[in-house]
Length: 334
Image (cartoon, rainbow, N blue to C red; front, side, top):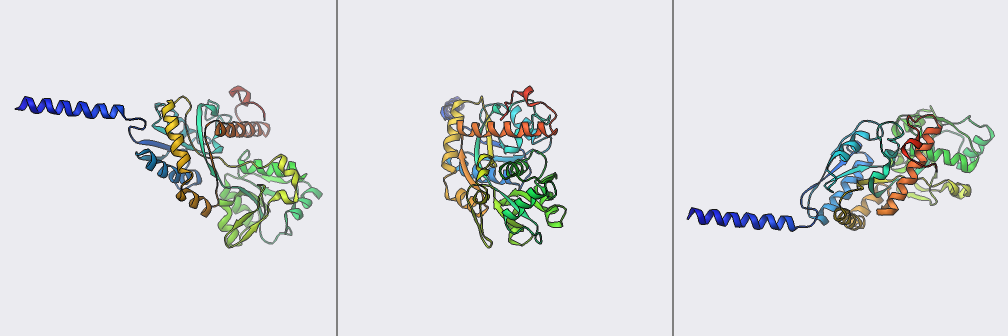
């Protein structure tokens, strides 16, 4: 009798094992290693999109945060060291493309296959009480006295700094750029009068704009933007069409899979991502938080990150803020 039971169990477990082996990817839960802190834009985007993807894939996607290093290098390194089997993805953003030239990462960004959820567009704002009531007022003042108006946009080489440089190049204005260690201190500097102008994302500024702590002069995208309780923020392109030669430079927040991961994993994640980005949950979240959805994956997403890496890396190098020459990493000039 015991032998019959043992044989029956052996057959049962063999059948179960065969069924598991036959199941297509994913066979088990997936880990999403987010390189920035909990509650931030990248973390929130990842938790929103992976929650919807998990429903489609039929497994859990467990989000963890691995912060630190240079431009998210600790989290990227941790994710990249895991087996490239499709069961570890890396939650990241456009800022991670500078890790290489800043000495925290020894690879080009093309070791990843990225998926772009989207990002919040940048807005140029001033502190209340300045004489600049319109973008034209500000630009013409900056052109009349080059370098006299202080402007903050996070750290040198950040996406916000690149947008400020694009405004200068597209309008002929010249600001006195003051770098800060992030968007929050840059915005605080504008509110306290340390600087007159700040460029950060609408998602980051929205509460300050509604509270009258900052005054928006122009969106740095081709379209105007409606903000609840505030009204319409005009596009900077309306007053300065030449900005179209340099803008928009947009955030690219999402996640990435090792480029040499199995093709079935890439295909399954791409299918789940494409379906998740179209859900009401993701669309309503984006609208409520002033994010523009991208939904790019595959070659489209790779092209976006390649352009960002080239732009960011060489800007940092030319500003003297990079430790590694982009040429050493094989990053072409933009």
